[in-house]
Image 1 (spheres, rainbow, N blue to C red):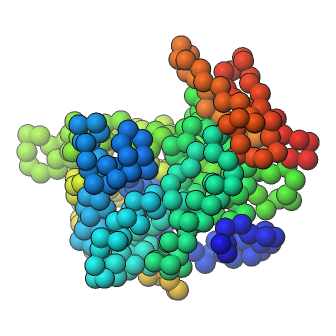
Image 2 (cartoon, rainbow, N blue to C red):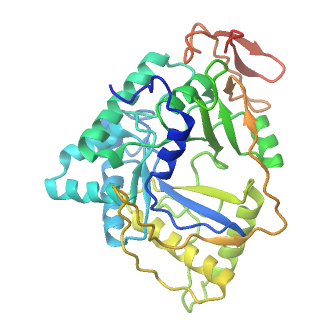
Image 3 (tube, rainbow, N blue to C red):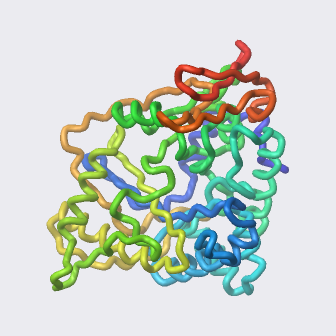
Length: 400
């Protein structure tokens, strides 16, 4: 499949040009403030506690309450209702099944949302592949399968530019190198070793540049990588799913008005988790058939936080959709901004490890995945175990 593996990798100048030509549907940022990006998404396992069809149709909700078809129905309706809203989606296995149900009018609407940058595809694989137990060959094949569908049905704007590996248990350097050579601009992960994550949070190094190959000349396999603070969940106290119990944002003249406490809590979380150089992303999981619950409360949160910073009363913005193909026109709603306090920008750390492992927390049973048997994301690797840190690791030849 063309474009699955770039061979040879593009020169640096071309790579920079490609980044500049990407769709610009996000609000402009301000260097003097902390720019917070809310990322509405849904995490839909392509088979876990239920089968793929049970997850899609919402069967056996006594096992797990999930019906992906209703999530997609609800999200598309909310994006159409308000041009300021954005959403990302990853699992092509469900999207392709949902796509077959839609009439041509709905398909045209979805294509328009994608072209405007308001519905963005991330990852691009048929599923979110494991990085330890899966062999590298089917990993590439399922990426090709998903990307082929997106290209055929959604066009050039449907081609993902961000890898989205937020649920696999640990992350291999080989897959990061594959993503970089396929032309991805960045990678977001969710599950890393608890000790490594604690150190990164303390040092504010949750964002890094992953040098994913020891043999390819930089930057052929360099990939911007971000570790999400709460795996794929929203910050504590901000879950507005119909299955959650966190209170909604009440901003009317009511004894239940909670705007001050909600805004203060979010500001505290954002400033505690931000990493250099003053930009923070928070994932917001819309695992619900009622996306309006999430969007309505996020709209209120954005409006009241920006109002506190600017001193201007909150308003509901109306915006012209941003057309990203072929000529971008960045017109979109405001991002919540916060003063950067005394924070000094620092260069992002450069990462050279073989993988970001996932270790067992103290007191938990340890499952060691051995190379040659299941650590097969890199065909050149042999396996071993670090008994002191209780994590699996890979041994790589000197040539990388």
